[in-house]
Structures are given as C-alpha cells and as structure tokens.
Image (cartoon, rainbow, N blue to C red):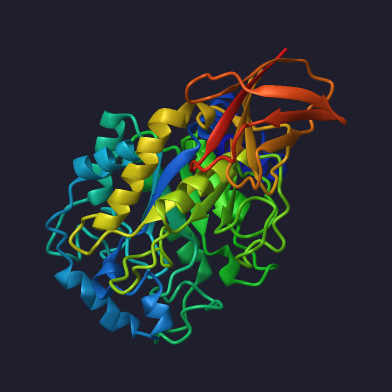
Length: 433
C-alpha cells in the first residue's frame, strides 16, 4: 500500500512539472474579468508606506543609500492617525475611478498588511497595529470598487533577495541569502493576499527589471500559484517587456501604449492583452513634501481620454501623506476628473479605442455602432475623418445632441464645426449603420 501511495505521489509531482510547461489557458471567469477591467477604464494607484514619513518619494532608501537597519526603525514611528478606508474609497468613487491598486509591499520590503511571513509589517512593527489593507479591502467590497495589489518582486531589506540586483546596492544589506527562501516567502505572502482579503481584481508586479533578463524568477510558477488560488485574478507585470506567458494584462509606465517618451517601454511591444498606462499626478509616486508640480486638470483629463483612445485604462497615482490623508490638491484633481466623467463618462466607460487611430487633434473611442470623436487640439473649424466602408446615420455634438454638418470628402468625411473648439474635450457622437 505504501509503495502504491509513493507511485501516486510521484505521478502527481510529474504531472505538476508537466503542467507547468503547458500554455496558459485563462478560465472563463478570468476572461470575463479581463473584459470588466477594460470596461472600467480608470483606476487610482496608491503608493503608501513608511517611506511616506521621509516625504521624499518611495525610492528614498535607494536614492539616499539609507542603511536598511536604520531605515527599518521608521516603522516604530509610523502612526497614520488620519487614515480612513471609507474616506479613501469615497474619494476614489468621486473621481469616477472603478478600481484601486495599492502597494502591499514596495521595494523597501515593508509589508502594509498583516503578514505572518515577517514581523516587518504594519501590524507587528508599528504602533498603529492596524491592517490597513484589510480595512481597505472591506471598504472596497462594500462600495463596489475593485481592489488590486501592487507587489514588489525585489526587496532592499532581505538578505535572501540574492543576488543583489541593480538597485539597493548601497543600503548595507548582506549578500549571503538563499533565493529559494525568498521565493517561498513571496509565494506565501501572495497566498495571504489572495486568501485573507476576499476577491482580488489583480496582482500588479513591479521590479523584475532589477535583475538581468536571463535571471530565473520562476515567474511562471508564481503566476500559476496565483491562478490556482483565484483563477479570475488578473496578473499584470510592470517589467517594461512584451507580455509573458501567464499574464492577463499589459501595463505601460508613464507612457501610452506604443510610445516610449519615458524611456521605460523601448522593448514593450503592444500585445493583445487588456492595456493600462500608469502615471503620476506630479513627479513622484510616493508622497513628496517638495513636489508641487501637479499636472493641470486639463492635462489629467486629456491623459484619461488619450488612454481610452489608445484602447487602454488609466491608472492615476496618489501618494498619501504619512498621516494617511490624500494631499488636498490630489483630491481636487480627482474631483475635477470625476465631474468631467459625470458628463462624458458614456464616451469613456465600456468603450474601446475607435477604428480611427489617434491623431494630433485627438482620439476616438467606440461602443458598438457609436463612434465618439474627442477633439482635444484642433486648429481650425473643419475636421477630416477617414470614415470609409461605413454608412453614417448622424453626426451630433455629444453634450447637447446638436446636429453637426458633414459632407463627403476624399476617402472620408469633412465635418463643419462652425467654430474652433475651445473646450477641454469637444466630443462628437457619430452613429454608424
């Protein structure tokens, strides 16, 4: 009998190894979640941790070469007395965003949730003693906001993150760890995140760029582990590369898909997965007391529109203060976006990038037989649209349904706007047969 059990166990282990080599086939639940993710179009990114206390961005440990043991002492003073999950989620809903992605563990290695894998977390290492991720998860489920978890693949504080990567080289960390223990640590933390906080919309990885491209992260094992626990959970990885087997979405850091103005997307071919672009309101992701260089309301709304026109979501960041509050100006910006979406949300939510590719003057979005033309920067009062092989039923101004004149033109139509648009976004609604 023991011999039979041993054979069965061996066969099971072999089957596991074989299955790891098979192509990833997403479940129907996963595919439905991908569509829902594309429909949501707008999310709020939250970078928050003990680095917020230094008020100089989330990379301060690396940028200032702070000793990891001294840096860890920050946790003893971390007490975000003004943190309110209900207020956060209410502010997010007011912005018109449909999901939140929050840093569960950033590169500094500090966990913002009550993990059992290390005492270096907000419950065990701070006087606050509260699991803010748990409170946020409960409030997101209550207010119908999807919750995503950012999770760093690298760690500047653990000696089993070995070999040391491109970053965190000056923080005094030892180099005598075992990668296998770090890998197990990550899998165990991901298990906690996917079992203790209800349904999770996505795991959003970062940090793979810290090691050489041929480094074996055992990334497919990590992906399969996630999908085994929550098959519907999306996996998005900010690795700045083309999509990897097992992923469910593709993100672009500080860039629209197919662009590389930030320098992070030079090798990121636009794939067929749902797309997302993540961007900061000012210059930093984490809270910075000196960074007042916030983008204008118009710039942020335009970025949302351009993302949608490029068939992508926008994940717009906020770095909460160390006391747990969103900066006032960030709330103002979110409210402005929310106000605009109350009027024009139909042209953004549940749309896909229009069949007319982005132009200098703007972009198009599309839902079924409706084409929404978002005019952001037009120099005159005539607009040429290359609409061929499609019959136009009507052209009207979206906001008040005022009919707009158009005439056939070479391989398209010419639309007479009567005057040069000066709104943040002048939207035309074109009904097609």
